[in-house]
Picture 1 (cartoon, rainbow, N blue to C red):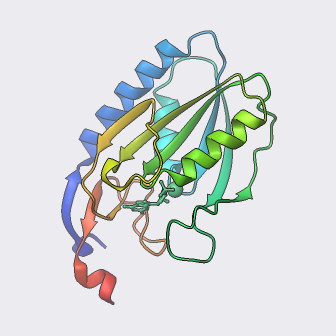
Picture 2: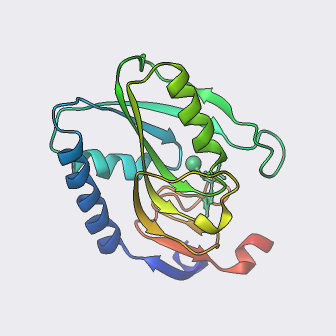
Length: 179
Ligand code: XMP
Ligand code: MG
């Protein structure tokens, strides 16, 4: 598995330090608000886990799974909810936890859904951002790292469902895609 990686962009220690910093910042900003922290599955599961451990305030968590592009390959703008929240967001301060923002379509759809359900506020924390690929005007409130326009894996992110368990984030060797 490790031999499939061409470049490590951010190693484990660097990611852990950044997540801790984000968690501390979020704890200050959400103090006394009992936020509902929403993990966008599957990619955000590791970030979510580390982030909430770094948050020192009362909070609740829930999970949501969406498919970004339906059956087609890219950017149809069609986002489908595969697994919805268990709890209602009405009147809640909601924090969406995302692994990566690419075109921004997934997130703009999610924000829209949560606002229509009358969340009191919707805030977005993403670990990774690829601003060069944005097709909708959207920015996260909290961003860990800004990435170049490269497909990355690790720390929750996959290629064909593999590599999610790598503790760092990296770029795959081209021959892996061509297999
Ligand atoms: P949009 O384009 O809606 O999509 O912002 C965000 C989702 O696309 C996936 N994505 C990636 N997954 N490596 C991955 O493993 C990447 O480099 C990458 N770029 C985008 C991801 O599921 C994210 O939630
Ligand atoms: Mg994702």
